[in-house]
Image (cartoon, rainbow, N blue to C red; front, side, top):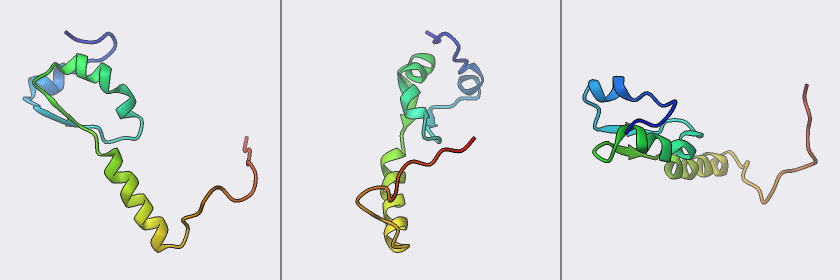
Length: 76
């Protein structure tokens, strides 16, 4: 049942029945996490709510726009 490279044992042994995907890249890993934890653990993905809140914050700060201003920036 455990996915290769994903060790959910400590979470499951602690009795976790809900896991919140608390980072922006975790929804991309949801299929692997699902395989690691099985069907009895709920995975919550708050990314849509976070995106809505970001939109509200940007709007309040008058930082919302139709696109990026200017061209690309490169830093090394």
